[in-house]
Length: 185
Image (cartoon, rainbow, N blue to C red):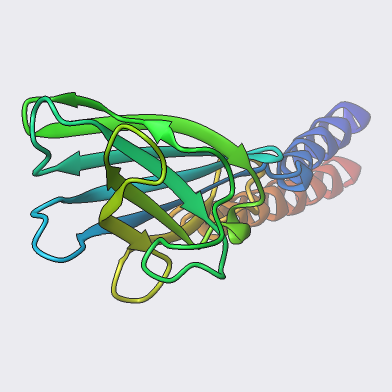
């Protein structure tokens, strides 16, 4: 009986600690404000999501002119107002009404991407009508890690969850040992 109780307590503690030791999956996200350039009237958001060695980009733009063509590009830190330092060829936006959306992938890591543009025109480079840059004025949300192990930070709650699991494991182990001592008497 004693061995069964001690074994169960050790198994519970081991399960809790195994959950803490899992590595975090490599997903990070960052949302930036897409600011108009000049008096274009184009604005919106850009979401960057790291997926392994690539970064998925989603541009949601508003204030576009229906029937016009728009492009989007991602830039390195040498870019100023989304000019210079293009990472890849431009991606074409799909415009419906006055809004448009484009999704494309560029090589990572996410830290290498400084800005994302919306450009008007059918041929690259077109003219910049909106730009999202990694700066305090355009950041909507900071990078966050995805849901991997319990020690990954996701909205700050993972550390709290880890502490609760560790405390529960300690209480279970202590209770189990106290129970075993009572059986010895």
